[in-house]
Image (cartoon, rainbow, N blue to C red; front, top):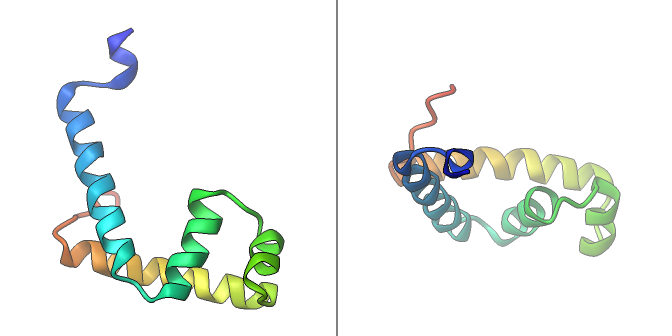
Length: 85
């Protein structure tokens, strides 16, 4: 059953990644934070996100794209290296 969670090194890395993620997210502009949280963390649809924020769906898509790019760059500044790139 313990193998379902991976080895301790993997668990530690996940915890560190999560820490960098949230630290980096907090440094983004508020609209980027809002759209990333609603779409990627709360898993809302584009339509639901647009309704909550009072935006057009196109603005949600554009802001999400730009926000994720800004998040990636901020995480790299924090020392996170995405090995899948």
